[in-house]
Length: 589
Image (cartoon, rainbow, N blue to C red; front, side):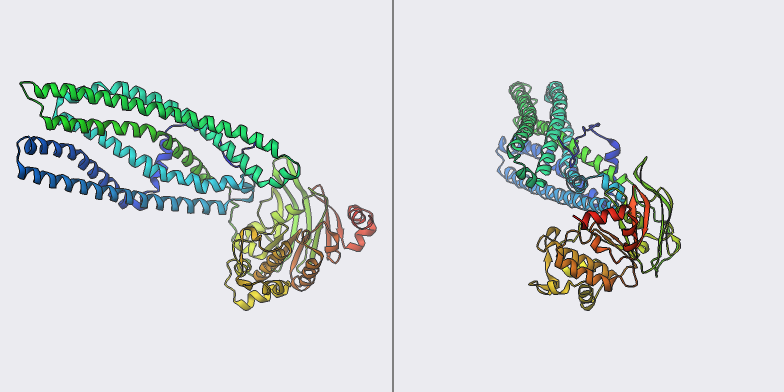
């Protein structure tokens, strides 16, 4: 079953110290919040431990002695302590969550910044769904680590330690009896931890498979319906869903068994404390008071509650370790296109040269093989060839979305590696077949970061004949585009992308299959607009529809990564080569 969108790797370490250390490194800017959180936690824990001791004093010194004034005084102090603990717990919860939210904000920002700088090669190898998961749900596990796991562990350990110390202070005999019951509890906890870890891994794997299957089938629902695969898909999903159900039930079984066992040990301990403590209290020595016995009962309950909590937080710790591992793996990835260029190219002319260029997406599978050609400023060069000939690859390496393996590409005589990336990509801009428009207004998509006046935006749209349809929309240039700009047509999306390129005014324009998905009327408008726009600019046009490139200054014909033909349309048609064959296929059938 496909698992493209979600990882299903088992967690190799239960507690990775390196991951924990790196998580804590994000706390450095928020040391003051961490200190306040820790201080509030410790003081509130101390307050919770004082409550049973205070209760003991009220019972022994006030109730047993029938001292009304002391009872009132003790009750007021008791309520004050409860209020104090409440305020500190609120402070601890607030500062912990505030700190965690800021840490997650920093992580998301760092990850997104890292992703923005990654090479096209890296992005092509990693599905979008996986990267989005890193920036969202995997980062979200940090929230669980700080607020649910870490704070809970610190509080639970503090309470367990504090209750034992308090027990020994109140009555060493009863404290030793409580310690005798601990070994069986520890054994059950260790066994439960192993079972919970295995159950969590099974649940995580099954959950990932369900998510991956849903993502794949929902994205291709039309294909499922066209080929009548509804029944088969339903049966396959039932199988995965049942696997997830069984994994969830096994995880539930672990906790359904563990919690009652800990509660059973807690009840046994309480019973022993009550029986033995009552016997000692009623004995002649009277070494244990009724107040002490009641305080012990409260302390025993306080002691066993963290035992259950720590075990149940273990799976969240596992999840946090898994999320942290994935987050830092992405954060450590460095596959950026090196930007070491120092030659300023503020005013490019648009002279493009390929000199014996070789390139392979995968080692040993060359796509471009010793490719050499030159396009003068202002020329329109069309690139044609069968699928896989390397047409789009030329554009990718020209703008340094990928770096070539050997040879040299030059812009105005300067190797593109020596030109700063921002300047290079300001000079070379594409209009692709799959237009990418972002959620926002039409004018924002045209500007895309530039500070343009309304007149400049309208002029760019008019140049490519987009102004008419934009003006006809209810909100004109303020029209908000939905996700993937689904509220306008394919042709309109193409026109906006042309307007965007024109607004940025590059010296080199790339049209990659730019009119292959557009109706005849819209294509006619684009052709008219291009006659004006391409004047004075170097342009590369990649098209299967040869009608769009008949007037090109040069037509470069590729075959298996090599330049096999070069010339104008009329010359190539008469040569009876690859271009002539493509031409006959389109116009003689």
